[in-house]
Image (cartoon, rainbow, N blue to C red; front, side):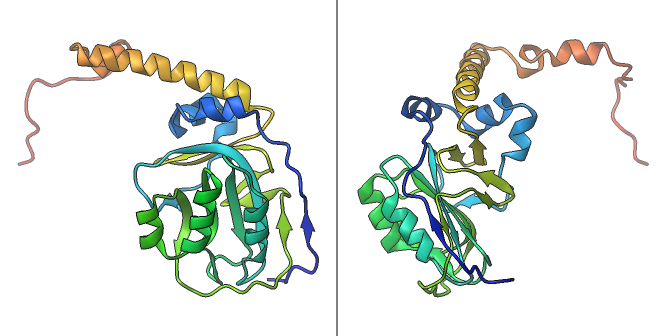
Length: 238
């Protein structure tokens, strides 16, 4: 892979509206994903991207970094420039070449008020970061040492785990994965996700009252209209 020969660092970010980020904290990645329609599939990171800490959920505007092989200098610049509530999205040019994130970065990010970090590449010191309670999603865990001398990008568009992320886009992450919502789409998508959540909460109340998903989701009517043979007997495998 060719080394990066020049760097671009953008000092300002056009962030998604803070009210939209706040509303997104109330919904799940599944709610957001389904509310995006076909766009949701191309903006969903793969199952490689997993949280190192269970039971956490974040939503906030992306601050991006693209780091050279075995190096995390640009991650540190992006971290320095990030603001409270931001989600740092880091891409390493060679995923297994050097850890992008560790306990000291997490300690600073937590003190600064960042929402969390998403890393295509390695993170380390995970036991300490878990104790700290700072939300991290990553494709790999490895203690391999990173340098701090390579060129890269900060607050420019990156492709993280197959998804294009522009600075200021809304990033929503939980135990199901990481969903990116383009900044201009975010208000409409989150409104739809909130409505979806309300409907599902109503269904949950009906289940608590004795209802069944089979009927509440309309599966009974769909099933009844299909040509399905039901046999009032056990399968005989003799």
